[in-house]
Image (cartoon, rainbow, N blue to C red; front, side, top):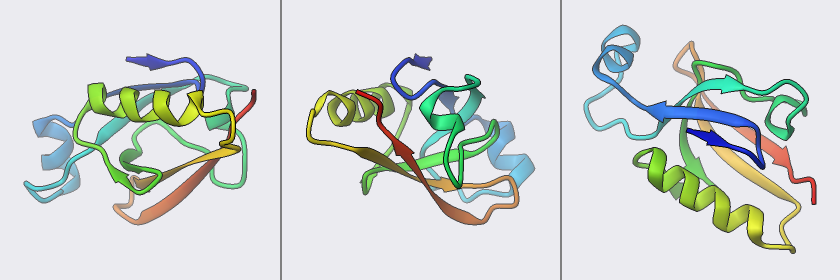
Length: 104
């Protein structure tokens, strides 16, 4: 599902994602399927990339695409928020943090 304010298309983690990357059965989150060029998520020091798994939005655990979109909407609708922080698992299964500057 496309999230317009960050420019990210996500999908739920599937069996093959877990199998190929040897993720634990308890790994929850969403897989980044696409990042729109020039969108906030494609910019910055550590931009999002397809294949990353987003596990948290501003320190709140992500279980699925629906919840991810609700969390991002809540954060991006807040006029006081300047950035949104994603905890991610990279393709090398290394945990990272991605900070996305919000454009109002």
